[in-house]
Structure formats: C-alpha cells, structure tokens
Amino acid sequence: MTPFFSRAIRIEWGHCDPAGIVFAPRYFEMLTENTVRLFESAGLGLKRDMLRTQSIVGYPLLECRAKFLRPCRYGDDVLIETAAPKFGKSSFTVESQITLQGTVCVEYHETRVWAIRDSELGIKSAPVPDDVRAAFAHRG
Image 1 (spheres, helix red, strand yellow):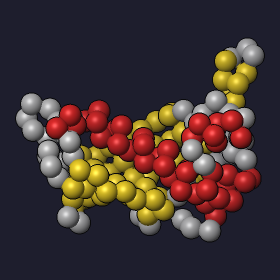
Image 2 (tube, rainbow, N blue to C red):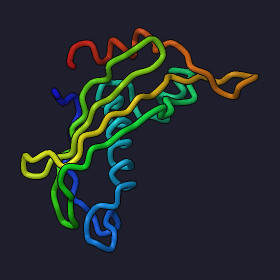
Image 3 (tube, rainbow, N blue to C red):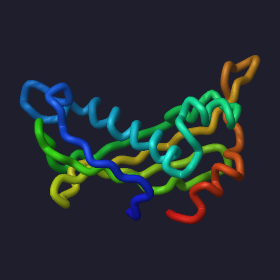
C-alpha cells in the first residue's frame, strides 16, 4: 500500500476496553476519520464544505472489513496510513493500515458510495465527479 494520507495518534484511555487494548469500534472511528482527512488532504476541503460544494449527502459506507493482527494499547503511538481511493462509477474503495513501530496491527478495507439527495429514496448513488477523481490522480 502506498500511503496518500497518514497521521500519527496516541492511543487514549477512552479507546481501550477493560483488557487494556483498543476496543474494536474505536479502530473504526479512527479509520473513518482517516478517510475524511484523505479527501481533505487531496484538496477537496473540510467534509462540511465538500458536502456543500459537491452537492452531495455524503459517501456512506457500503462494506468494511478489518483484520486485527496485533493489539494496540493505551499510550501506544500508532501511525494510520490510507491509500488513494480506487474509483468505480459511483463507488470507491479505500485501504488503510494501523502500524506500531513499523509492525502492522490492523489492515482495513472499505467501500463507499457517492450519494446525492433523491425525492423518492431519500438518497441514491451518483457518479463520482471528474474533479474528485482528478484530485487523487497525481498520487496513488
């Protein structure tokens, strides 16, 4: 995986379960935030602004899976790396990993859909705009 966006975080007390390791849902919060920041780092602005400028409801999650290879614990300084999206017509996939001192702890894959408002369905998929694709074209 070639990272497009990465950030270092310290595992906080609130991330952990009584066993002292990261509670699985907290990983998904961290990884989802990396996807949000991935789009920001590509020059598309804060998510709240991107929703307005792109006239979308968002990019809801269709599928995700994680492989937990090594636990992370309170006080660990981890690196979360996310690759550039691979775009389909109206969906995209994102690959991420969380590492601790160079060792992969979590591998993550998600599929999301580009969604707009629809008067009958509430929301529906729409083609990912060319300018969004272009924002990631130079790296990835």
